[in-house]
Image (cartoon, rainbow, N blue to C red; front, side):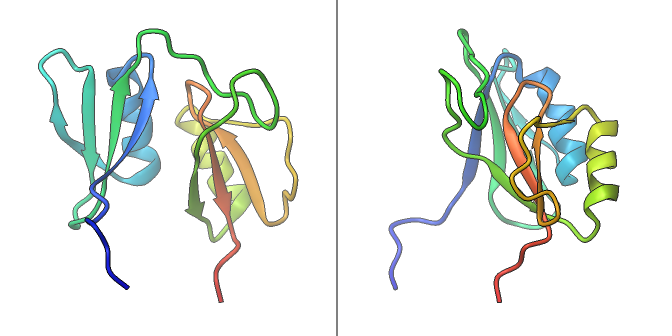
Amino acid sequence: MTRVAPLASISIDCPQPSALAPFYCQLLGLQQAFASPDKGVISLAGPEPGPVVTLMKVSHYQAPEWPEGPQLQQMHLDLASEDLDQDVAAAIAIGARQADHQPSPDQWRVMLDPVGHPFCLSVVRAD
């Protein structure tokens, strides 16, 4: 299989990248790799080469509502978990919250970052 280009970044719209960056640094074990002079764009990277997470300021940001709402999610992150309860507690400790709707809480937990983006902690693995 051929590819056009490798994945470089996953970009997340938000109202204030500098306020959201510490959350994703702690959640994913990343550190700031780049920031535009006005901090409207902040890229976070891990110690290994690979895609970065880029937080981008959107002036009229509207948080997605999950599972239904006027502003639906466009994408979300799935994070591998070994212990859902422990990882949910750790995510909450750094500013996340659990979504009200949990379709399969024994397999994954739907979480919301500090500005409302959904992400999942999941024990589901590909065989």
